[in-house]
Length: 388
Image (cartoon, rainbow, N blue to C red; front, side):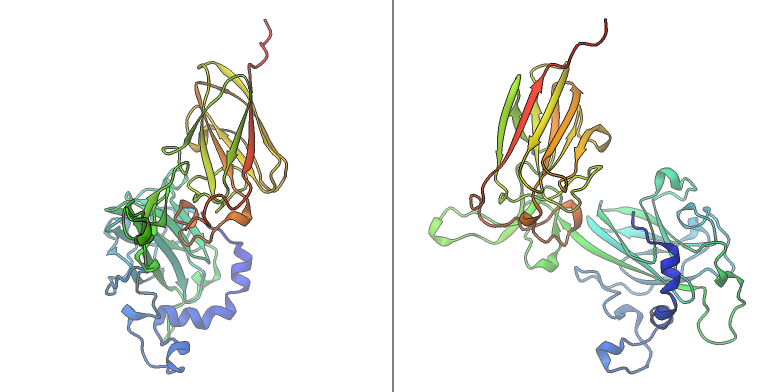
């Protein structure tokens, strides 16, 4: 969930008011046409009406103050006003104040970018899955104010409720409608879609989209070694997700693991400490029985982080986490069951730029074997017996 300091937003609001007026009321992009002040076509607003994959949508109906009657929109710039609106769903993000609504239709598997602009205020944008509900506590997909936000890997056919609002005590609500010029309570919502590609899909040029979680854009192998690599396609990566985790059999004592830091990996998981946007290797620790186990996992390699989940691989199964900024990394945990999941965050210098966010899609680095391996020791023992 993206968030910014509200006072900082308002402090910077005055300098951006002219830009916001252009975004909402409509004017040319001075940088692209020499500063002509003529009217602007909403469907070609400096690229804001285009998805990164080339979709162009005509302007939709304005936002409504009733969620059930919200107009269906896609990629593009969409408009509305908070003038006369009441907080039907408790305000955007459930934080009070008037709100207005769009229903965003996602036609294919996509990353979705949303950003709101207000004429005389900084809009708050909240997103719910499908249903008009006041249960923002459990249903919020995103809540942002003053900055845009990505919703990553939204399924094809999804229908999202987008609420735009402002604080109930914002001074802009006290003003009367202007006799001329743009109403300060008008706003615009920019929507962009970026394709999320399946394994085997072509992934070049970059504008096609990004490879989905657990895969990377790599040259396809060919049968003829002299012919060179084939065209780049999204390729499933070993050890990138829990589904493709590398199995490691543990017994009592120390098991030494070596990880090649140049092996292509993405970052498909989020942990409670560090490692955001960092590639990671996922290992499936196979334990000798389904009882209790004491684990100590350590590495002295610089900038390596560790996280452990058991008995499942969901975020709530996390048993411990060690930030990679505090070497040497030592993770200690007691787990029960016959399997645990170890995540090794790779060093920052091995990271590749990833326009697809934390859900994967990086190109993966140089050929394996050029760097010294990362050594991780996993020591398993029987935990001490409890009091009789």
